[in-house]
Length: 357
Image 1 (cartoon, rainbow, N blue to C red):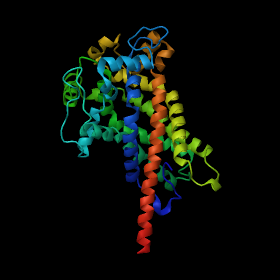
Image 2 (cartoon, one colour):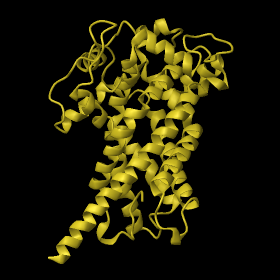
Image 3 (cartoon, helix red, strand yellow):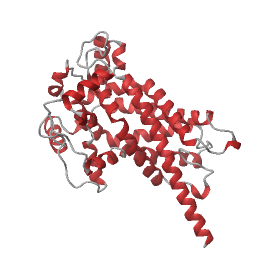
Image 4 (spheres, one colour):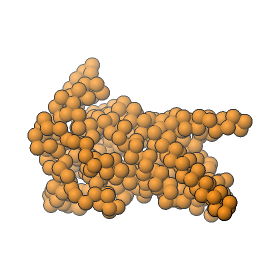
């Protein structure tokens, strides 16, 4: 069960345990959905229409874009942008060295080394912070207010606030990830250290927080709707009391996928604005992809997109994003519930062993 469970008694989990389960769930999920994230970002940053019927830009659809990226940049291109997350791994003592971001030649393969495994762990810090905050906030809401921690409204509010806290912590890394995913060949940034030093020198520290306002504006309702929808779907699909708990993990996957699709569709334009703002000052690396634009802020970004690309421009990249959202949210809740069940079982066994002694 996601959030503070007042009926868990001795098996109730702490925010730290929720953070551990969230990190583990994110690590597994991240490895599965990264290619869809790359496709989504490429579509979002393309000024020209994304259409196979009326092709105007470099990318025209999911399959064409996948073939294009694979032939031009290799299979490893679908996992671009994860190296920035190693910065957080240093804070947790996971990585001591900074590997090369890219091979020396265009055709050389990137080996799946130990550092890549750390990458998958570290990109999940956002989920770690989010689930820990959510567990803490739902517990506070249950104990300090007259509301039940398992109601959909509490989940909406706590889910939105927990996501905002995670976003503020992870925004610099998200900006770096977006830039690495957006650059093609030849590359502007050779490594994480080079990217950080170049951005600090040429654009200043605030460059790492570009797009923060639209991100926070979008992430609160997005995460809130995720937890709200997941709660509603879980209650709707709850089995009769006599049927036991069979199929619980499958329900988590289905409910999480539905929650991801709903929340992503309703808040998608803000994600696009964020991506456009994050690559500001990075136009040189985008020239060979097609037209580039510079925006003075969120409002200017919205106005320019509306004038040049129409309302449909606000939803560029929605198709891979929905696939990614369904898989990402579904697997995140699925694995989160699995790891929570494992930790609860371990806790109950230890408690039973202690009582037996």
